[in-house]
Structure formats: structure tokens, C-alpha cells
Length: 260
Image (tube, rainbow, N blue to C red):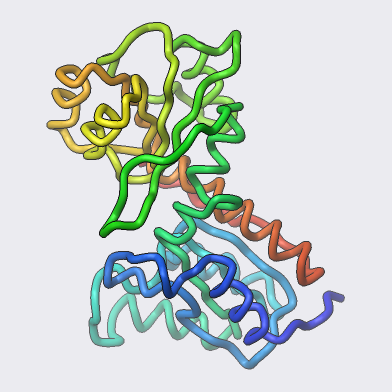
């Protein structure tokens, strides 16, 4: 049986470690503790989304888990507690599940952030950052190791480390031989110009709108769309491991891919 850890202690640590009060974000992100429980937790479950399916899966585990997510409960705004919002909250409260969410603070974190972790998995030698949101830095960039400096080699590596069934979507606007690679996970496809302005020839993200095809082709940047969900699994996994080791709690990842 797992030991119980005081939820408030874990939350205080996360707030400081992730700098959730300092990193600007969308209003609906509501970074930090979104739902408390009876006061202690006995395990950590990481997930990308606080969806009903994820909540039901975590609730079925029993005990008093902390659900650690990247996309929290309130992205759709300040809405009445009816319909699906009621069902989600009812399940969380009934099963004593606490929810902690970190969106852009997790994307940008230098150790467990989506961008930094994906860069390490790809073997990039990090050189610096690029791009920002409301004045706060967000992306990372680096150079590839010898033997992987081609679009095809990078594509194969990206597919491998993210466990993708199919190869990532490539918009081949840049050179075949890759030198400077930038990463902003999730829905950052509109940042092609920022990648170009930073002198990058290749940009990895999750997804992007239609017009970014022409951005990539006309700005001379290779753009990989590796999936919003897939590119943002790596940060919550790393954060749950970090937290589990620090507080001596079991940790796991709840996988509920969207295909997007």
C-alpha cells in the first residue's frame, strides 16, 4: 500500500518548480491546483487531457490519486457546472481525485518541459531559445548529431521517440540537410515565421492551420507536424517521474491518444 502525502505540500512544490504564477498563459488554462481532494494523495497519474475518459480511468484505480495534466478542465471558459463539466467534477469529487494542470509553464520548463524533453529524446544539442508568448520565452532550438542531419533521418527518429504509428507530416519547405532545429510542441504551427527569424531551417510542432503550408514553403523552413497529443505526452511523463521520485510515490501515465 502506498504512503499518503499531503496534497498541499505537493502543490506548493509544483507551483514553485513550474513557476505557474510567473509564466503567462491563456486565461482558461488556470494553471495550478484545479480540484482538491480530501487532503492527501497516494499516487500520481499523468495525462495530457482532463477528459471524461481520463477521469473515469483514473477514478477506477481507487485510492486518492493526483491527476497531473497539461490541458486542464477550464479551457472552454467560465461556464456553469452543468452537463459535461458537472459530470467531470462529480466523478473527481466522488472518487477523491485531485487535479493539477500546467499548460505553458510545462511547455517552457527547462528540465521537464515538452520542448526540452523532446529535444533531448531527439538528441539535439541545445543552443538556445526562440519565440515567445506575451514576452515569455517558449521554444528551444539546437543542432542534430552527426548521422541524423537529414530530413528523413529526423523523421524516423521523431516517429520512434514519440511511438507514432505513421510518419510525421512533413512540409518540405527547407533544405534536405538539416542544421538548426526548433521545437514548440502542440498547436504552434503558426510560429513558422518565428522559426525563420531565428535562423532555423527546421521546425517541429504538433499541428498547424492550412496557411502554414505556404509559410513553410515561402520562408524556406521544413515543418514537421508530429501530432498535438503525441508531442505533449513527453512533458507530463517527465514531470510525473520527477514528482514521484521526489515524494516517493508511484507514478504512471494514462494514455488516451486523440490521433490529432
